[in-house]
Image (cartoon, rainbow, N blue to C red):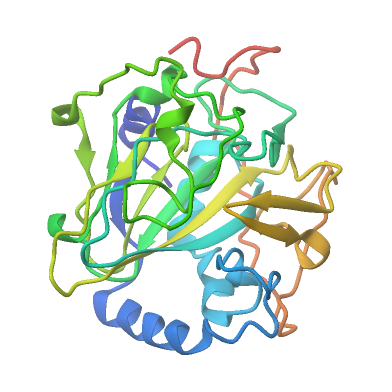
Length: 311
């Protein structure tokens, strides 16, 4: 499990890593297999969309990846013993692609203004969502690694509920799949000190865990040939409502029908039953649920308050 020092680092900074999940040769072979399967969307949740959300539902390697012990033990140490995976997505960055703008979210309401996540409990110094970004290729500085602004999860500098107009194109001009996150700044004149950023250069098979409340973005890919690829898997405690009262959602210019979606219990148990749960992927393979580990987070419940307010 996480050491006390690891948890204190996360509480202070909003991210933790990189840490090793797979050996380089292993993840290279995984990516070779995923690359062969990703174009077949016949069993995907959203077969008609441009964005590869939730391919852990139909690609076996990713079905197993989302509950890898190296991921789950860190998740449980930060948000508690009972954990859902609610989304996965690919993040490629090709040679010449610009860096992604700084952004900060929690309920994933950007674009539509409708939250995808609704927390029902707030715990001091404990996030209500976590992302694990796993490198499937090497990520040296020149290929566009992630960057974080340490400690920025303690204060809102962006309004994620503000609706955004979508522009044509993807990431060539610093936007994020059709959105400019600069438009969400509470202070449009906000300038961030880039020298304070933590840049996540990573080896293939390493990962970083962070709360999306921590401001993050990426550097440009200035290499001539190297594509950078990461798989982001997103998690919440089981007391969070996911897509409440929604049968579909709109994002990045796509319409997503939730008919085949379901949360995956990667650790512990679901005592709340707020959410639809998938126990098997589209190939009828069972998802893996890691054992419940008691007392991995001992945090005071914040009645109606912000979980980071106490610092």
